[in-house]
Image (cartoon, rainbow, N blue to C red; front, side):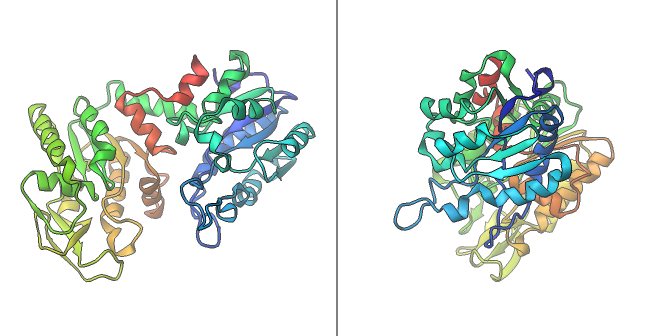
Length: 406
């Protein structure tokens, strides 16, 4: 069931979004893509005369506690998103309120007092351990705040959390559904799995083979080329017998990498690893650097970006493709001196799209790269959920999607 199939007039709507946005040291939003992506669903509810009790998490406060073991509320409060949400909504909302808790008497009172076309933003759901535990009592307290539940948080759809999956069991099929963003995400995924145009190229980056190996193996059944960059490439290069110096290595995954490369060869899927790398003598933006063959890196040096030849090789394949999925940067993208390879891939994906390819970009770093390159409007679709999209493409069931459909 989708949001436009439900009756929302004069209804209080519990809306789960993904406002897990990056912040700087002053708690200012660096990229508001995830807030903007939620706007169509938010505005639709308001236009229909509903009011919104808005839920989201922000960061991982449970894993980054202060020295005394307490949660850093100043750093992870969802209040950081309220001003930007208010600005983006303009006159669409009568008012946007914030309450510094997620459950409890104050939340109940403010939710009850909410008028049509008003929004109440609740505090970070992950301030409660019950959220990530999928706790039923916690979810019931959330459910009691509203008559309708809408999930539009694709970025957390692969998590069986209280506010994304458990809460849905307290609403019948006529009072729960997906927002417009999740609808778009699911439809975009289908374009990659249902007879995609060929050549089909997957671009996969990031730090670890272990994070992406299921996806990589699944892709062998669907794609023609897999372009691999980032730290994970060096475990694969090591598996081929290369010298990788101090580059990132998962020693326990070398055999897995060998097996994957053998399977790719059997299935006639081309695996492209970086022929050259920009290497550094330390993990620092201001480190000494040089460009060498990726399989001949000296001891003490580490690969932090793809080199010019690798970028050219990758670009040639990408620009000739008709379907493209990109997840993960080609290097340490957050350091300016090692971001060039990732930005070049963004250019290549945009050019291929202009030439008629369907391109889906997923994952925070990849989306940021496309935006930084000024190509955000030049790719077919930018997914808000890297992990969730990967799970879909692996063939896995998303708990939050199943909770709405079952």
